[in-house]
Amino acid sequence: ETAEREASEAARIQQVLSAVEKTNDRYDSFKASLSAAVDDAAEAALKAVCDGLTPAAIERLTHTPVEVSNGAEAAAHLKDCQHLLILTGAGLSAASGIPTFRGAGGFWTKTYDGVEDPCEILTLKFFLEKPAAFWDWHFDFEDLLQGKEPNAGHYAI
Image (cartoon, one colour):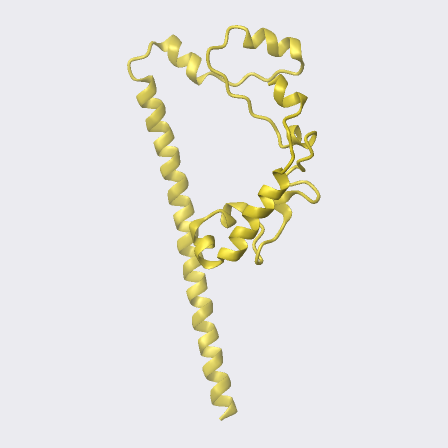
């Protein structure tokens, strides 16, 4: 009887593992499909924006980003810009007391119900399966931002 029970439990465990593997495969497929759809949408949006524009206008919208290393270079480049996007590292907010996300003790290094990756935590699937962990993450993030103010770097931008 014990052998039968163990065999039955082993079979059930195998079924669960198989179901988990299938779910993971479907999730990976979904992520790949979503990524492709976002890329296609971005390309279509750019094409729609550029439709009817002159080549010079398209160049202004799609040029290679400019890297600058000091304020004078930045000011010279920004002087005539009509559209601007500035990407910074998480370190910009460190001066405001917000730790870098991936650095030692960073917010994205924390685990919530066995999950560390915020790209997984911030999904409907995670919310539905682990709502308490989802809200723990949310409230921890809000707590992290409490009392923080923009710093000189933010104002300079």
